[in-house]
Image (cartoon, rainbow, N blue to C red):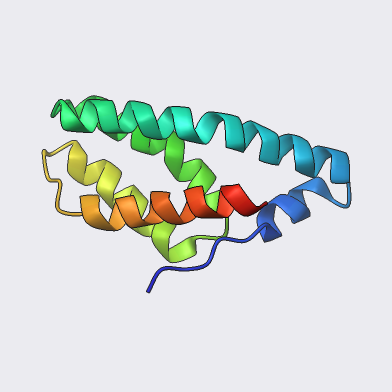
Length: 106
């Protein structure tokens, strides 16, 4: 089961500062699509070492949205890509889609 994204971590980080919270969300909304696009470019080119680097960047955002179990999947996927193992790709894409959907409504 896919966890539901939330803003709990970002709210804790912001410590009540709405301005800081919105700034972090704004940065993520800007960076996430670019990082996903770069990941897909490298993955589709079978440049798995580069794709693993992209996953590394994305995993921090995944963690920020309260995805504890999905963060672990992402860490495993990053390591697997370094060994040309792409078996976790479908699960990883579900995680990315979930975040994309969430970013549209926050």
